[in-house]
Image 1 (cartoon, rainbow, N blue to C red):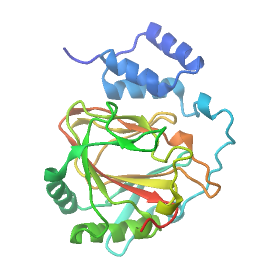
Image 2 (cartoon, helix red, strand yellow):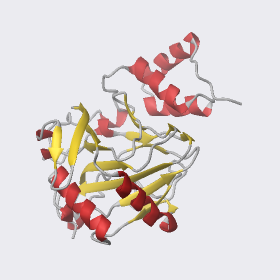
Image 3 (cartoon, rainbow, N blue to C red):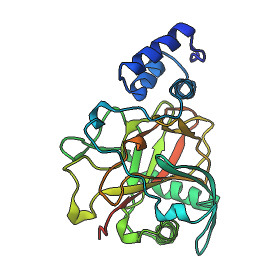
Length: 281
């Protein structure tokens, strides 16, 4: 049976009523997908209803508004030059701060990363919001692996490029992670920063930004979604998205919540580079 690709007027009315009651758009989108709606259509329809305004989070009522600061990567114009690459800025969002980048990796580099990673994949884990420990959960159904800093020539070359691109030293970055999603696999809405009280200052402190790199083209599905601001990024081989979510006041940006919607056709390969406030090593 095919997926549903049309939302009735009655369902639209229910969505608006549910949103106004304080239910997260992410929860509503997941409910639509479970009812048989095409994932991309469900999210895009919800974006149209929500609009580009921020959706209030009940848990954030007592927090001061996040103070936006432009990171170094956002102060370099529409073309960013590293010592070995000319990277194009395709799109820019200010709140949350997001850059969609093209030509970050070559086709050969993408293929080599995939080849080197295939035999080392394990079920992906997440950081528990209560304990701060990593564990396997149903909401993240991909497989992944990590490289250590300077593990091989390719990783060393890429780490230098990422340092020049983001203006954060290699020592501030966690080891490169490679993830693989098959049909139906996803990563439900989450934040990349650590939970309050679970930040280890001895290991670099809080995460400040994420560089998410796309290693292949996905035939259908697998978009990276920022549901609170209506942003959807389609995987394109060699491209990347950088998003920044911690400021100099140690605030974290709740608008940076994001998800990877299920792959519909084909498979998806990505690499993730998380950046900390201070050196880890």
